[in-house]
Image (cartoon, rainbow, N blue to C red; front, side, top):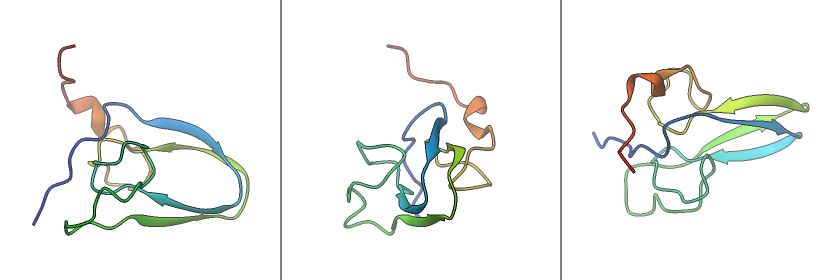
Length: 83
């Protein structure tokens, strides 16, 4: 089974309006946390998330959360690359 790339080392907290959003599951999107089609040719596909009301959520970008597509703090176990 393919493993996702790490798309980021912290969550992205956003206020979301009602609608359907497509969360990047592969980690390759340049539009984290959302899909930009970079998964094409892999075993990954975006996860559709339906928001029925306006609310603030923390999106996972490390792709390791047990609560995908939302952050559960799994990124805190990662060491970001040195810049």
